[in-house]
Image (cartoon, rainbow, N blue to C red; front, side, top):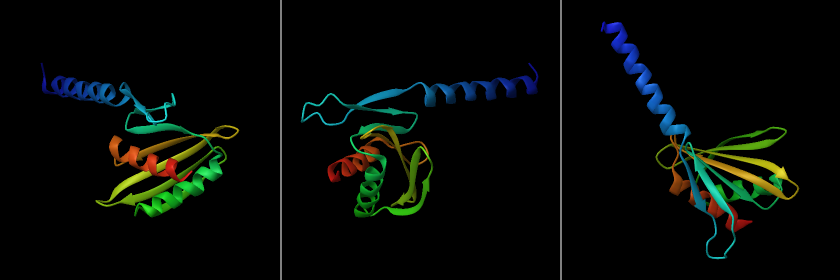
Length: 134
């Protein structure tokens, strides 16, 4: 094999491994096992997805208040027609991105990503704080 063919094989192998690691893994996460509710969140590709029972505007206001209480430094907000994004930084300069999307009347979905590759425990902490303040 020539050097060019070996380089192509290595690059293809790395790309395949990356796709497998970041796209195929979905982890169901119990939201509130103490109350017996059957709601679950999911963690896929570094993103934490969970339902929240309120309109997107109310969730947004609660989320920014909860993030401020946690000591996160909000850096930006992006308001689009169908979703709201909140950008923040936490200790260690990890980026936190929260997206709130209205899915039905009185029902929203929240998506949280902490850091570049995601951080499930920290995402759960942020979600729990938002949900507790609702």
